[in-house]
Amino acid sequence: MSKKKYYTVMLIDDNEIDNLINQRIIESAGICEHIYTHTGGRSAIEFLKNAEKIAKIVGNNDCLPEIIFLDIDMPLMDGFQFLDEFESLPKLIKEYCKIVMLTSSINAKDVKKSKRYANVKEYINKPLTKESLINLEV
Image 1 (cartoon, rainbow, N blue to C red):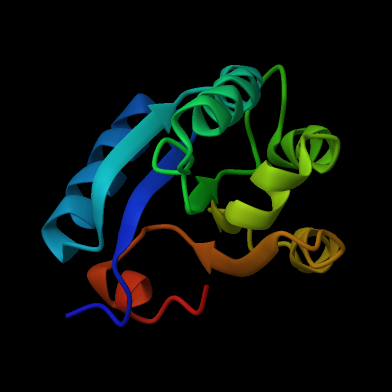
Image 2: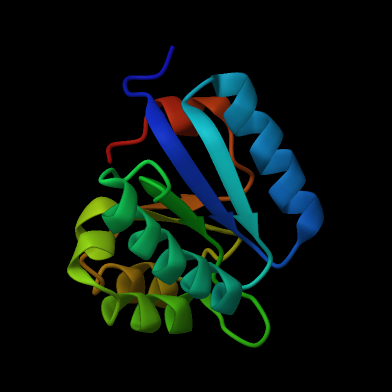
């Protein structure tokens, strides 16, 4: 079904309902083995830091998400603040994790701003669909 199968993906969205729906869509598309969900950018950053330490200890990157689906409009740390923090993470994380903006924003400024970040590979408008997952180019 999907062009590529991933071991692990991560959803970052402050809306728990969106996370649940997106998790179900990802599961039904069968594109990965594991899905991590976070309702805030700060917890996701801390998770990535810890996962990178574990990856070094166990000798593989299975605990790191290959794709991170990131919402823009979130309290405390929005998607762009997450991306700024992500830029300062260890090289292993930045090379392994690819980011897909998954947002309801259709603002051209947001699309343009997201392209400034090397790890942002795609910009998808909500809702997530099986078709958009199958057509991912990451």
